[in-house]
Image (cartoon, rainbow over all chains, first blue to last red; front, side, top):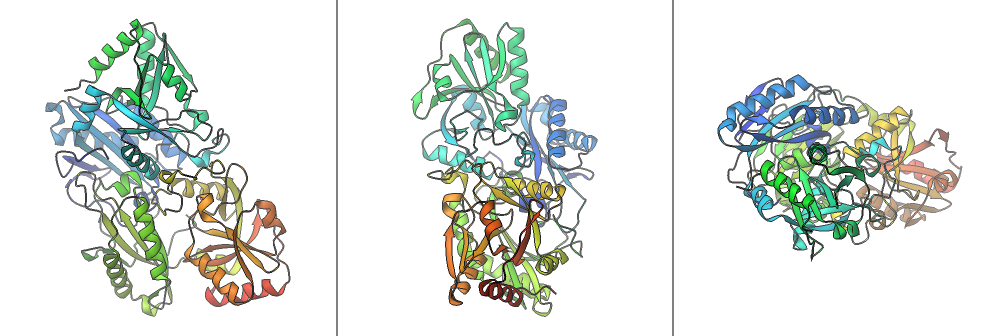
Length: 295
Length: 295
């Protein structure tokens, strides 16, 4: 975790089907399978002036995650819980905030009662700093064999599960190496994704991100939108494969996620990346600064 | 999950540092990183006539898991919580029960306050049935490249994390294939472990289990003990590597875990395994029946 947020509790928490609860109080049982098995899925969503950005696309992805876990998904219930925490937090007046939706399989000893939660929290200073300064990354293997996800849906490729222990361990390892974040590769050296973001790189007019399905990566709502926006500006969006060498040869490298937005990657494994001075780089930088303000 | 246990709540829950709580009530906050990131570790321990079996070895392993996650471990606090749930549940009078210890990184917005829980639950009928009848397994890839864990501690090999979404998805996939449980292999076909147990196979007088460290497997407290017991009976315990072919050629194949104990694997991928009629097989079967009664 990059640093402690400014408050000791999130400003608003709602339980799906039950409504707002005390944000500092307990809401989940000790035998909830989300807790004991990381058995569930989630979404992180940016809230701007009280509106959840790309909410439909996030709910679509959450529906796919739930299906991948054989969990029912109460879309209307999550929409209501999201609206409740946004309203309760006063997020409409505070600019940006971070909305998290969590779905678990529910209590082990009371089967068939999934847990649904919505939590609203303020944006951390680390997010704004990353937008201002960019980030450095350390590449770390995720251990996957190339092609591991072919015909292996139980590996939950593309499912945004709650089982992020390796993701957070990788972030701590990156910090030990003096980097701001980790970037996963597979055992063959193919780029995958960050622990909480997807990678994109610009070379000439081509803006490429890792093709999620064959790599077992999460399909990024925000990268999808960034690529679509880039296409309207005359850039060529692409899903593909790459290695660290592609990042070193790129004109610009981005780490993209919903809440933090698109931020520049300025260093890989201790070596600086040099952004090129092209028209495309200029467009991307203006686009990032416009969509994800650093202050 | 094999099936619903007979009660809708576990009989006893304690929070480390706080004591017994309502087992049907909420104990964990919505922003607990154990819930939102599967960021923590656990132990499952068999309780027999009120005594937690191999408690010290389990607490030793939990200490190693916590260290692997850079989490502090309040051993005395967990010992006290375990004693509380055992006493409160009346487990001393009911034969066998299942004790779970859970440690998480705690609330995201209140850093530095790990969550510790102890839960006691009755043994499920599925456990006793597996002891009586053995189990069938479906082999599934875990996606790891051979050697993936060498020099990659952030992959958390040997750490019993809460991030078990793939483990539970594999159990559902096994059920879809008509098997009782899954058995993971790496991408090169090497045997790894089950989602919640370790595998051992007997050939002649040699009882082998997968060498955990190079394979990123969990070191099994119960398999360690079984191998030690086997050595006292003149068998040769071994840590090694194997494939499905080794299981097919074995005299006896076991799935070993703390609560369920050692149970026979009678079928792999739809094909029966034939247990041999050797002195060693006889000793192992008597040993299993004595330690882990089926009724």
